[in-house]
Amino acid sequence: MEKNTRITIWQGTQWIATLAGKLDTDWHSHHAVQLCITRDEALTVEFPDRRLTANAVLIEAHQKHRVSLPDEPAWIALLQPIGSYAHGLRERWLKSHTAVTVDPAPTTSTTPSEWLPRWLQQQHQCDTPPQLSSRIKQTLQHIESDLARNWPIAVLAERIHWSPSRLQHQFKDQVGVALRPYIRWQRLIHGLRMILAGSPITTAALESGFSDARHFTRTCRRHFGVNPHWIATYSRFVQES
Image (tube, rainbow, N blue to C red):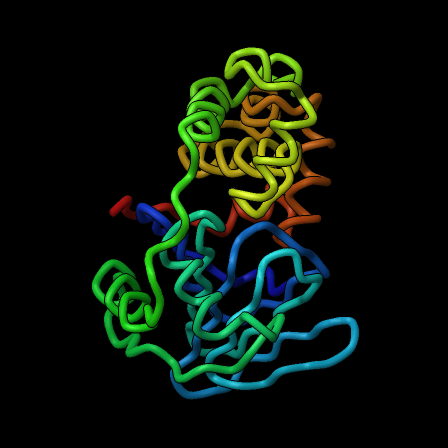
């Protein structure tokens, strides 16, 4: 990673977008559908078995990869796996591919809320995503109500009057992510928000349900390819749209 790289981060309803210059991540994978875009110089996304070099690359969730961005500013957007945007991209581009090159979005604006939702909506060539059942919605609400809690699956299952096995099966089937990794992902995002708001890493880790800062750091590197100290030092959160 380039130590002089600066990253700006925005958050929308179904997405997190970053604007960064020269950057090389470590190997990582996560639960979001990822879109990487540059305007002039190509970026490179490397997978264990191949490499894609283009101005826009779309990556399915759960794919091990690392990203190399050029010197010019580049966009990386992470889309929530259960949102309509991710569903639309899967239906159009990712039904038979784990990663593809796509026509880049118009990114002349420095504010993603001005171009990203519009581009994502243009990709919709499918029906709306399947609706979550009321009990899965309740489960999501319980998780989001206390992200610092290390939720036992048995407790979540009891609250919605399902068996633990049925909850895990239905959650994976409807959300597309296993329950335990989903909880860890939401806690990680919560901790990163705290860091970007100025909280110390240890405080963010503990209040997001991690055992300590080391556990939080390992999880961050595994899912984003960078460590939280680097994010805290070189990133700024400018807007929530």
